[in-house]
Length: 245
Image (tube, rainbow, N blue to C red):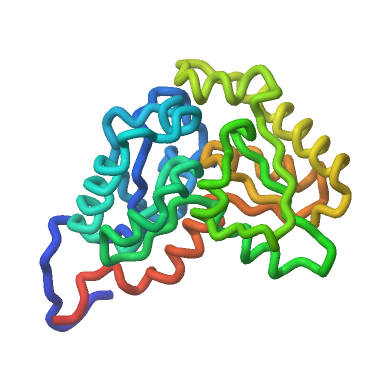
């Protein structure tokens, strides 16, 4: 219950995390970052016009940094306590976006990789599942703080037929059952090729609907962007105001 005198300053309240969304139309099922029912708390969305998935993932998000900076600043003006993005490949802009606003910014679940590595026993590596291993490059690893001292193994979904094609092609229909089978198959292959993997991190923000399936198949801890958004929310939950005047 609110009591006493409180101060204003924003038009709306109750948002801890603001999400910079790609400009898409493909289906977003529960568990997907772009489906608001994924979170048991309200999030604030901002669509970045022109930021289509192919441009961001396959073409390095060329020319898009100003639009993402503007979006982050808009979310900050609207009162969010932290800003994230709707594509793990935007981690290449981590430093620039963090410098553009005064609230915390976490662009990608890849930022979890150094933390997860520290959790693991010596000799274990972090497995990364990504929408496109072919275009996950040094600039993304550097942006996430993943140095050469952190052993990783990467598997991309582009070897399959459904998930990557629908997302990067921004298609209107997704076969969820087929996408689930693909995630399990790729996870199984990744762990089979690298039995020293101690945990998995899912780069793509559209992968969390399949996190539980991957956990069951591999028996490993699986971290994703929902893990990170939830962590940020809990760190900010008492700041969503209005605050005492």
